Amino acid sequence: MINEELIIKMTEFNAGDPKRIQHFIKVYEFAHVIGVNELLDSETLRILDMASIMHDIGIRPSEKKYGKCDGKLQEQEGPFYAREMLAKFSDVTDYEIDRVCYLIAHHHTYDNVDGIDYRILLEADFLVNAMEDNLSKDSIVSFRNHVFETKTGLHLLNTMFDLNRH
Image 1 (cartoon, one colour):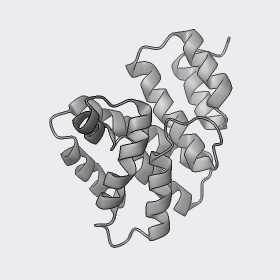
Image 2: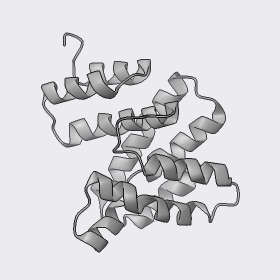
Image 3: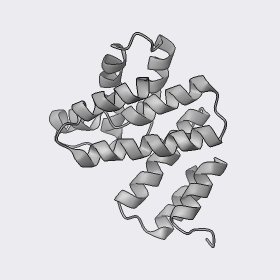
Image 4: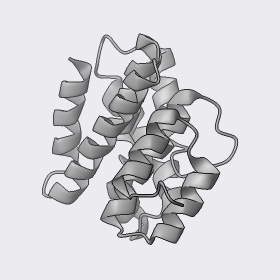
């Protein structure tokens, strides 16, 4: 139930911005599919699900505070709001809150990736961003070669963008 409740809370948080709402829903769906297919244990999948739903929670506060929302500002501002939202759920542990906040604070950082949940979040976010930002095949291939590692993430990326020949 936590995922459905978080989706509603994040929809409320991003009220009036259907593009942003649809973005996090797509990232969540890709992350979940990759996590299930990569055989994540239930706790890691739960953390990944929450982080993927909330990964961009820092955008709106960054826009309000700084007038912009680049990746580093999202990472900086997001954990405070995520922690505040997650603390209202009695069945979310302190460990889960800390890990979700860590993932949010690093979802635009592509080095020193320290866990499969982190890796999958990067991959799922890119799967959506590549299409939404209309990235070139060369950019997609470069990102794939430097960031993607999961078998499922690679398969989805290669299939979606017809990269099997690159």
